[in-house]
Length: 91
Image (cartoon, rainbow, N blue to C red; front, top):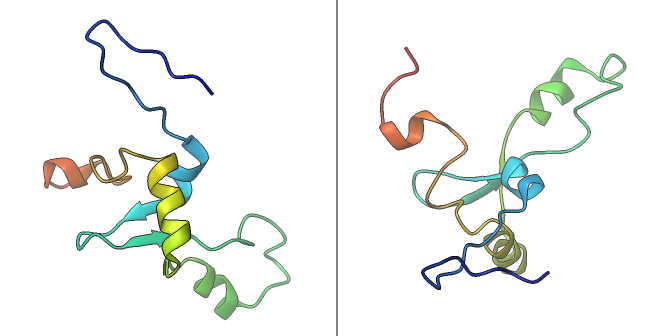
């Protein structure tokens, strides 16, 4: 996909929104991901497995971390938690 330059000549990189929704950075800078299989057909699953689906997993592979950084270049700048930038509580 070709990228357009703005008036100043700097490039704006587009964020891949699906990647930005699935991954986030912790305070220490680790890349974590959500688990799959948690959106539907949950009535037949045990409470333990549903509880385990809610946890985030750290990304171990360097290749996947590199790909995520390429697809979501501003993930480090803006975290998915809106209060992460301000440092305050929501209320």
